[in-house]
Image 1 (cartoon, rainbow, N blue to C red):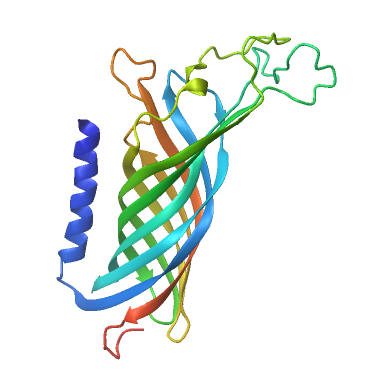
Image 2: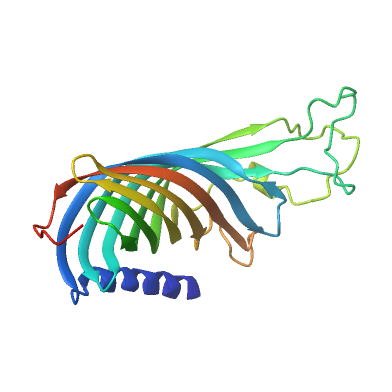
Length: 254
């Protein structure tokens, strides 16, 4: 229940930013596209040793700038993205060495497991920027809720049930390897920051780093289920291009 309260507070913050018209009024609307690289893991409880799993993300972006309050440029940013996420297991023995099957003398195929999952992700973030609006550089931070809808999944692995290995795995938690996604709806909090370069005739070019913390779980987490937690953690580096649809008519805006 605490996770729902936290998501509610973030959503409320976003709404208040968008409607708190107490500064210099703006009605700027820009749309465009975004794309980038995502590094994902899943916070399993009990713990599953992992490495970051790489994947692509990209989609549509819309931004509404509503005011400039003192030196802060306030806006709401919404996206609809297709994201490749999941997890990659770090299968090691008690000596922190890769694990191999018996008979694999060349040691070219250590045990590996990757779960690749595709989601539609919809972040809605409150944005605060400092700097130039129309021509030049602007730094910004943004924060808000994100929703996700599971689309499909696939597995990449060389695990063979029942085949003996030369050494034992350090982690005995393997239930996740054969479990399909049980909860198709994901939700959490996204926070990020970056730099924007704007030109009045060309548009807006944005480079951003973002972190997403999932408040939902991909597997059921009741007392009778195996995992108590199974939430996403995602690091995203992305670029965005926006062009203006509506611009506030004010010669003082720079």
